[in-house]
Length: 296
Image (cartoon, rainbow, N blue to C red; front, side, top):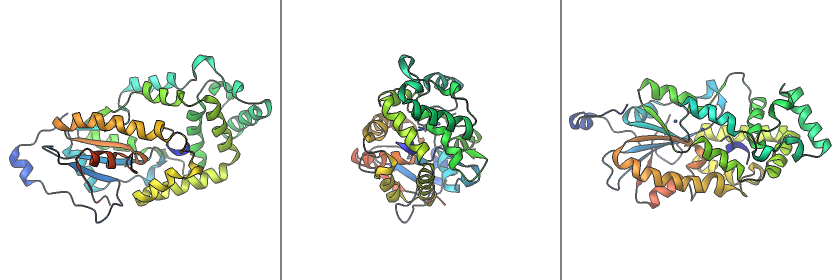
């Protein structure tokens, strides 16, 4: 389940004359890019796809001129959730808790619970009482800073919102916080608890896997990103439909309607772009032309 669990986006009108004078965006020579153009199937103007990585060292987050141009050409920016809405973030705090009053102590043996309690108290300086009712998958997000070689951490979505705001773009969400919380509720808490304990017990290998995925992301190797998400050590194989495939299909249904009248820049986790059930393949199956754009 690991790295994609944590799980995270002023309309501008151009005259026809302005549109004809705008330079075309440069295509990439191969598929190794996180930035894609969606056109065809009657669309008057292209829309764009971009793959994000939810948490990174802030100094590692850079946006190309082409990406900024794509944002400027879009009417709206869509992310997994509307992260610009304070109500979304506030609601998220409430929805992080397990249902039916479930607690971490109920999910572990006495020895396992002691190990969890010691780790969060000693390594993360977080009293177990503060997180007693939180869904174990959400707690894994607290492990990320321990794996990063930097003190200043940000998210690609967070930095992208700054670009969107400078361009005066409205930020929208493809999902609600309620929906994302429900996704995690659909996976047994006992299984989530085992994953959390496994991560704590194997922090060294977890960090190695995290570093590998981050390096592949920064190199924009789409095929390698797909391979990583299919590897067993990333814990995806049992819940790929819930976490990726079903959500991708729902997003394509929305985008088919949205893109008819609005040029959008869609920024979602990079894992949602790749594979036979990824956004790129699904949009092509619907008849759209999806082309790789230079993103350096």
